[in-house]
Amino acid sequence: MKAAVINRFGGPEVFSVEEVPTPVAGPGQVLVKVHGVLVNRLDHYIRNGDITQDLKFPHVLGLDAVGEIAVVGEGVRKFRLGERVITMPGYPSDPGDYAFRPTTLAPSYSMRGLQLPGTYAQYVAVPQEFVLHDKTGLPPESAAALPVPLMTAINAVQKVGEVKKGDFVLIHAGGSATGYFGIQVARALDARVAATARSVEAREMASEAGAELVINVSDDEFNDWIAKWTDGRGVDVAIDSLGGDTFEKTINAVKTGGIIVAMGFMSGAEVKFDIRNLFFREKQIRGSLTADIEDFAKWLEPVRKGIIKPKIDCALPLSQARKAHELVSQNKARGAVILLPWE
Image (cartoon, rainbow, N blue to C red):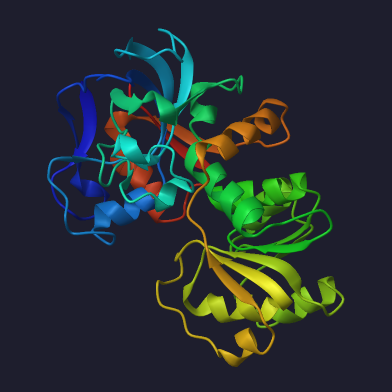
């Protein structure tokens, strides 16, 4: 099969399309013919060598994929040939950990494109426990925009952030894939949403997703805007995918007893803040990675109904993985960037 691989760490230029062995569906696994793959920001960090230096080359990136069942392994009862499916971005490598919840805390939890072979390929083998029937009704390039960003948003907003009806919620990077879905998830939970975005185009995306207040995070009056919007209380929950110098602003924007969900480091992995504003006001910082497959499955119904909508920037053939990474790493995409392995 064909796959977009990297043979060293570096910029987008390190990609090449090569013939690699087609995976085999073992007992309890299905072989998925991949119709669409989302290019995630984490793929960029892995390619750069920012996550780990311990990769075996050639390496295939890619966290999630949508496609159809090509081969059903021994003992598989949940799927039939030709059915449309969505695969999970990670799962435990030890079958004994399959029932562990949250899945991401399982001792053997592994991610596609990192510890496990990635999905920038024409086929991928996956345990049936971590595959969902795709009932969204969306074309592959749209369905492919869902797994990582929507699962990340669900976990950060609903599970870890505990957002509920009437809450005031701040979501950073409202024009990013995760931010765009985060706004929609919070609105679906009947919360009120403020978002940050730097460019005009990103601010337009955040408004389109449902944010009633959109602020440039670099604005010196950022916290004044939040105070005015919440009548001086501060937000109930803040979803921070930025980190870096922004994190202290996020803490200051949250009300007494409020929740800060840390789930990214787009502005830097190191943060600095006055800890007195945290413990004197009993604010909570919580980490968040991604949702479990059961949570994701529940949110596919709002997707089917059009309540949650993906936004696509472009869909490119696998041979243009380099261009796809340039768009994502340079923040030039206005929506999801999808790779199509069979184009």
